[in-house]
Amino acid sequence: MPSNALSRRAILQRSAVAGGVLSLGPLLGGATEALAQSTGETATAAGRGKKDIYRRIGVRPLINGRGTYTILSGSLMLPEVREAIDAAARQYVHLDELADAVGKRLAKITKTEHGLVASGCHAALTHAASACVSGGNPDLHVRLPDLTGFQKTEVIIPAHSRNVYEAAVSLVGLKVVEVTTPDELKEAIGPQTALIYIMAGPRVDESELPTDVIASIAGPKDVPVLVDAAAEILTIPNVHLERGADLVAYSGGKAIRGPQSAGLLLGREDLVRAAWVSSAPHHGVGRGYKVGKEEAMGMLAAVEMWVQRDHDAEFARWESWLKTIARRVSAIGSVKTQVTQPDSLSNRTPSLSITWNEKKLGVSGETVMDTLYDAEPRIALNTAGSDDPERTGVSITPYMLQPGEEKVIADALVRILTDPPAPPAPPRPPSVDATGEWTLDIEYLAGSSSAHRLELTQDGAEITGTHTGEYVSRKATGSVSGKTVTVRSTLSESSGDSLDFTFTGTLKGDSMSGELNMGEYLKATWKAERGG
Figure 1 (tube, one colour):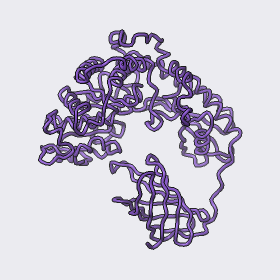
Figure 2: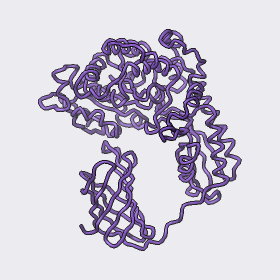
Figure 3: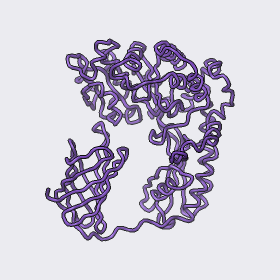
Figure 4: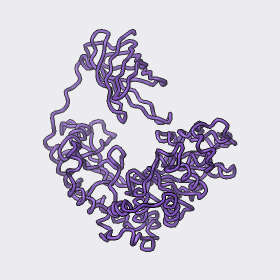
């Protein structure tokens, strides 16, 4: 973070100012557990009491040492949030009246003009974009995403903010215009500009186009600035709005520990109210992003608790857990540990890097990560990088751990590092040549494609080339072990999307077939013919 950024202590102290004044009181009824419990202990106890709810349908729960990844179901709701949801589920209300009341309450707590609970940060961004295009005018709103005849047809996104989540903004029909410098931004802004979208983070703060510079250019031209702060802590007063942004969106089920299916939009009242017009239960492009009364009140409870939680105590607890793990594993030969402190508002948590000499211990960080994820109990960790090519390791984020789980992780790491599993078989000399032009048939989980092509050149065991998909070509690399061919390609977020393909198959003559791993898009099967 730059020197003028708020320190963690300053941010958290400001967040606590509204403490006892803004409590939910009667809303939460019996939510009288100590604040220390509300930051984890109660959630753990509740989880143990209903530990079979997932297993009974064949799903294995896990210990989350990675962080607030949506694929790992984000964070655990605070007990006060669960209680608010239960209370909200027992009566009927009119949703327009609820949205108005919740919006005013959020504004008071967060010291912003108005607030909106959406069905996640993505939905908040979509509603914000709709508001910037239609301004809450139903005649315009119901036309989205068809912008034929509209004045506002473009969204400007600085190169530093291109990412997979920008689809939330462009799906209302807006054309993305990319800029890299202040002069390019000035040139790009015109009557057609609906808004400027920024993905918050150090990359923005350290660039030619930080939020305050963007706002200074956009403000005089009446172009709203929207900040995506999905994984950040909630700052009060809001750091992004203070830097000149008009709107800021958050995930509700990450740092704030509200419902996983909720998010926040805060900022300029006219735009936030227009965003509500574009959201469910109203019709049009936002109808699918429905927020029930339960999520609305649960999210409000989470924000109420945000200004009451002892954030410094939470941070100290996370650090103590990491020290427990570090102390246990440090007794193993060649193991080194290091606690890294956060340098940004996003996923603001310390992390522990554990590295070791791979040859001495006979196991890689990737193998440890994969083995623990498949073990019982199931533990999700990340791999850790190192400047030393002989060292490997794992990293642990305590953000989403529950009390006692640090001991489980320490035990598991000690066991696997002192008695590691057998290493994977080393690559075999190649016995085939994958050089050539390949035509692929892919069978996805749902659907199929015959449009993909691989143009490969093999040099020894190494493969280079090109992977062409339906619309995009990208660089391909890979290797050959015996008759097994592995080819990887990546489309980076700089394109506004992200695709990772790993083809693994067996080559026989002019035919290959095997499995395709696409990460978040799951797995598929494929077969290919050379020269087709």
